[in-house]
Length: 157
Image 1: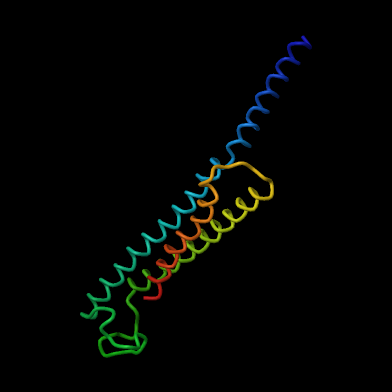
Image 2: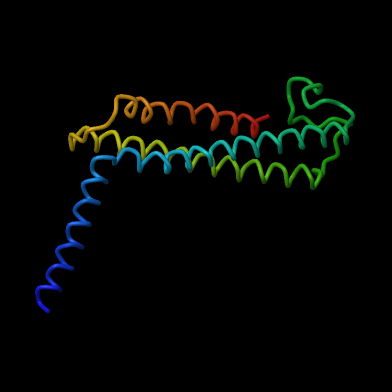
């Protein structure tokens, strides 16, 4: 009876050790889905802000009959074509743009910190990984910077 329990325990322990060996050997593969998910959130924010920017531009053109850039140098100056009360649709669009901008910024900070921690952890713990992995850790933040900038560029327009 004791021998069977000991055998089951040793088998379970051996399985756990094999899993730990697998996880430490292929640790870099486990981090990639998380990085791709965070990057996907940034891409989603970019696409949503792009859509909302086009909705805002179409609505502005429909109300005023002019393109957004046709008013001159000072877009904040009130003209006879604009009403002093903002259109509720444009207010909702601006609120949505701000929300997507905040989400994109938070996702970018999470991605940058995750990449930094993984890079430092790999370096300090001397973990083995393929040659493309450090380039991936450096590339994710740089590529996502472009998309986050485009999200905030839509807000500033």
